[in-house]
Length: 120
Image (tube, rainbow, N blue to C red; front, side):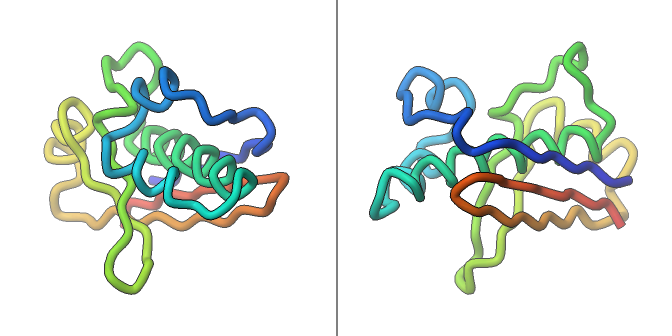
């Protein structure tokens, strides 16, 4: 399964209400630690895009009951991105894909962000 999402970075603003609705405290901290507004905006767009791509790879649509807080966007010590799943996203993964690996990749510029999630 593959999920992909592409967005314009300018759509995303640093809004605490929005961030608290879609992000874990660790994700918000990562965003706020960016040195400039442009990078913070890119990180918000990246967060959204990664979570959208993962939902698509899992086959979870808007009516599935999954929320953005069912997917946590993380980085390992080397900076490689990965996700941790919770709630309905984790249930779906464990039901259908437990023997498979979920990988993500993303890229962004000041104008665009793209994220891909692959279950292999």
